Image (cartoon, rainbow, N blue to C red; front, side, top):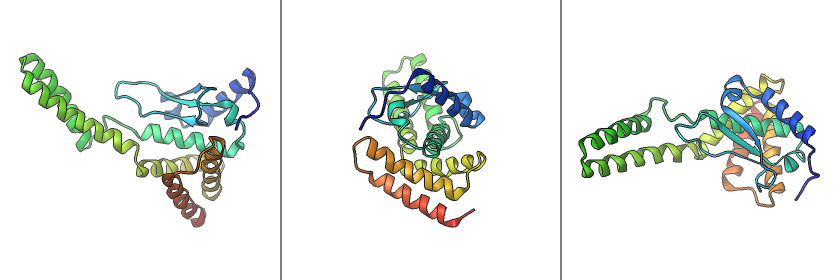
Amino acid sequence: MEGTPVSGNEKGDEQYRLIDLMPASGRMYCKIVSKPNQPQVIAAKVPLPWSESRPIAINFDRWQMLTQPQRDLLLLQKVSWLLSIDWFKPSLYQGLTAVGFAAIGWEFLRSDPAGIVVTTGLTFLAASQIWRKSRSLEQSQLADEEAIAIAQRRGYTSTEAARYLIEAIEAVALLEGRSITVEEQVRCQSLRAIGGRGD
């Protein structure tokens, strides 16, 4: 399902609007990138630990087929998800990863091949746990809740924000020519509960 091609001016105006919509931390780290050929309406990858920028790729031809409130909540959800990924936030796996990298450096200095293999394996295991958690349903739901909280500071009520995010999730699946996933269904159920609580 394709939309009418978006002109350069329209795309630029929308990018500026979205940047202004973001919280200050989002403007600092998240970068909106136009990807007209990507099948997803909006996409972002788990950032690498050393990455300063956290790109959000948008297919603006499809993006314009959503209502503005739907676009707002989608963008805020993606920004919230990206900002929630902190490789260096103190926790068990972050600590193991940091210790692992230090140990790898030490083993290289000692020129101990066996030690290098063991510490590299343990570091990879800890880092993969962080990566897996960032892609979990729980992390997505936390990002949904944070997006609603930010939207309330932008003039939406929590009920409106939850409803628009549900609509956006369903509309994106339609635009991408796919069925809504099980994870998205669970998220929508949680969002309906948030909307039902009122403001």
